[in-house]
Image 1 (cartoon, rainbow, N blue to C red):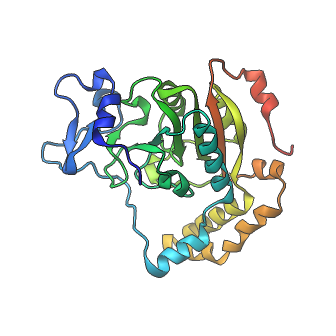
Image 2 (image 1 turned 60 degrees about the vertical axis):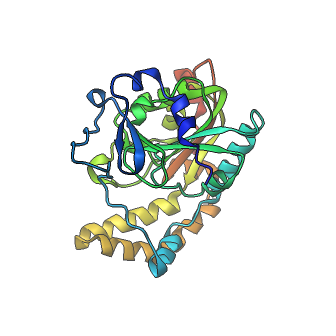
Length: 298
């Protein structure tokens, strides 16, 4: 995994995060760049040695890992988009810097990005993880302006209070012509409890990234995947059991493959999740253009 060295991160940190006593440091020397007075993140107590996730994130192994992959295999749409993201980015810089927003877990389908020896990855999240180099709040990214060739934000925007502010920060840290790749839920039930705030239609997602020129966008997962989510939460509610929901979901794992039979406009209208691949622009998509952008079947 070509994670950027610590000195490369320090060189790109904004001056306002270097003032005073500098960043907090937690166990393992992971720096924490957060302006706590402007963040929902609570400052660590003097006795804290780690900035832990508030959500339990189990490590799946053995048969459980196999079942997890059966119910949620890597999406071909994501693999295709990551490949294009890399190609478009390397056309501008053969050795690009990529910022991973919410990189505490390596995103599904991101293997090609992490395994590319020519890509330098800078990853952060609001909790400590072996996959990140620093802790920060996506509403106030501690990096300088115009320094990244690409930014990836996958399954994160539903968990931030102000997605528009996060999109603005992504635009700020990207170089002119830099690329954004985002995947965000549309028709999914609440996950991560109190840390789940927002959903986007494909058109709403496009307008969120209105300061970017569109390269591609659409459904990252269709109605078949959405059906699996619904079955999970139906049985979870009926039996007051998360396990019951997961067992029921496994029983209908085949539904996701029906998405291959559904034309893209219908996938967009019933999407479980949506994606946007775009390029930093000096102009913004106008409201009437957002309406004209609609790609669904209605």
